[in-house]
Length: 525
Image (cartoon, rainbow, N blue to C red; front, side, top):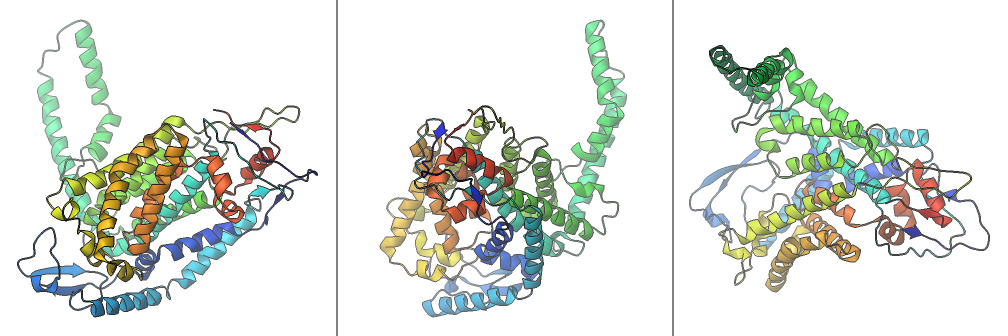
């Protein structure tokens, strides 16, 4: 692909837009602002639960599971004493939630300022974080490539992934002690102790089996040598340590628990471990956010910490977005270099020739990320169509009548969505089915334009969901893989300069754009 940008009559050396542009801390502040409900929960500490009596008369609609008897539920962040969905009470609930949100953000402002100050200091240490451009670029005409490149796209992908991890580990830092800590609701110690008992029982059974194995006849010749070698390897100290300390320690579903908390000597004092792992995760995600790059070890650290919390998180880490985040991080491991933190790893520059060009982003991984998004959206659509709930099916299509008053946490815009006309709610159901059952196939199309259309549809859909409620970082996480439907040419053509500087600016981007501006870059495939 040849990218050319026409220039003015005089060639002026490209200049950096604000070499001390505080892109890092602006991005971090945007995280806090753009995730209001999640940030409020994350920085407010544990909330005292309210016990509410819910009866079937309190609901003005039918739910998939009919409520026929009184039930008692624990709600952690609801302010009303009685759940009723009349117009007046819903407005009062919104006002109360807005007041709680403002009050909760008062305490963490000092922590946000400290984080912003640290980010500004990091920007000062890396003054070339700004995106480069030329003051004499008059028009920008990027050709439509048949084989697009994804070097700038990878920078944006890693930064958005870092934003999600910053949110996830902020929640972990301020809530895990109350949920899975030493005095939490479901302490992690219980899960570890149960898994260790299972491991000790399996280890004892293996020792009995090894004694019985000595009586077996392994034949003679090559067969005997093979079995002897296999037994020697399986009985080695390393294999025994791996089995006893990891593989045999399983949960109730028979799955091993990959968690760093096995290294803790005192399981009665796990709170420092929970805080320390969350702090390390925040540090790694901040580095990835600031640099726009990562290597295998950085992403592996984020993956291991996330899996650590998932293994001992119990019901709190049983929601779909937690394994979804770990799976996407596993894919990202194959997008980055092993050691280098250069976002344009392999950049070759020669003073005597125009032989320049970065190594391509692995195509197989790009398609794996698209398939990852495809299966998530198709699964979300099929579970609605295949359910026994008629509200999602043609002939009824009334699910959105009740969605906004039954979702986990509303936001200030939820009431406006809720009081839209019924024909609009039916249109929302049809639109949902289109986005989740039809549009995902565009992600796998060979045409560049169709893939871009499919990616933009998914991004817009998630933005609408974010504006109408709060599902933690699920919707933000779903946006991240959709970025790989947009290539470098699309980002350069459609992102404003200030957004390019904020989202794509790295030290290497300056040289990259200089070569693009000169029209002398042909990106390797």
